[in-house]
Amino acid sequence: MPSLYGLERSGDVEKLVELLRESEKETVRRRAAEILGNLDEPESEGLDALVEAMSDEDPTVRAAAIDALTQQEAVEALMEGLGQSVPESGATWAQAEAFVESLDADTVELRMASANVLGLLGVEDAAKPLAQRLQAEQHPEVRARIARALGRIEDPSVAGVLVEHLEGQPLGVRREAAEALGRLNGPAALQGLLSVVDDDSEEMRRTAVSSLGQFENAKPVDALVERLGDESDLVRRAAVFSLIEILSNVPPDRSHELRETIVDRMAARSDASIVASLVEIIEEGTQIHQRRNAVWMLGRVAGDKSTKMDAVEALRDVLGEDDDLISQFAATGLAEIGGRMVETALLEVIETDEYGADAVAMAAFALGKVGGERSRKRLEKLVDETENAEVRRRAFSAISKLGGHS
Image (tube, rainbow, N blue to C red):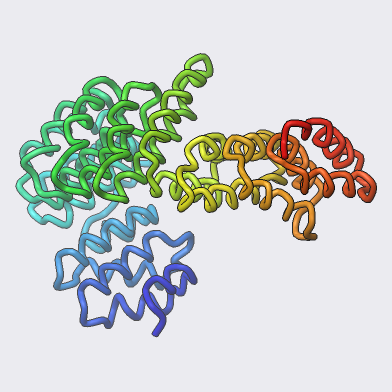
């Protein structure tokens, strides 16, 4: 049978259902339930299997099934599986009221489900009773889901209660509280997260650092830069991602100054994981603003020889991007790195057929800043051979700037 990783990638509902129903290992059943919850369309067979899994002998599998059904917004199936009915009224507030009452239910599973659904409904009036229940609830799995629900409702007034659960709780509760605080923003949430960025637990530090990236101001920057020196590669990477996200969120009038500060501090670290994180954002990121910031940064924090090649290759490969800023930042970033390695990489763009005209034009532009005599000869040939006006213009301009290079 394919691995769970393979099944997650392929979205094979039939195989996942088989594992959820028949595997003797609770870890496999739990993971199968989680994957089914993350699928775009798990189909009725998948939902039926998740309902059945709410009666699994293992409590972690039951909890995973409840979470999965909530993610699929299969509230009716979820509640029927627990022997409950969903209020018939179409009003969201009326449904929320019923689930608030269920927070006091005798069964752990119903309390978990009720917290999940309240987070799904997002009714602000549910925040206060959820916060009260968080302080009274004895079961850590329920507390974790209440904390998650409070984050989804996004009522800043409950930040204090969540901060109280950053310490002295099982790790699962603490992490959910930290994630929720990232969604709430505000001074109380920020101070709470700053208090645990140097926690003994690597998972807790990573969660806190990731949550700080959701703040729309520069206040978390110093703490995030400090985490660039964390002993954990995962925490360092999370810090890079959060710094990129903050740069994308701050007002434009603050952006330039902040960008320079962050880059200076990153460059001083000269850490391979920083370069790796920026390359990952460039290659796999889906948000254009994140990719732009990562491209801009990469040329300025490329580090020593061991990481420089990765940076050069990543920047070279986006020279022909449709987004003009990414393409321009890549060219200026390569020029910032400079040296024979960059010149060679840029000449490859011109000399092979793998790159389009836009990439060739930007490579020519960058060669004007870093090239030597071998670049001059190749650029002169390019001017004579190309039929693309922009490529010819860029190459001709680059030749005129090569006087100082040898």
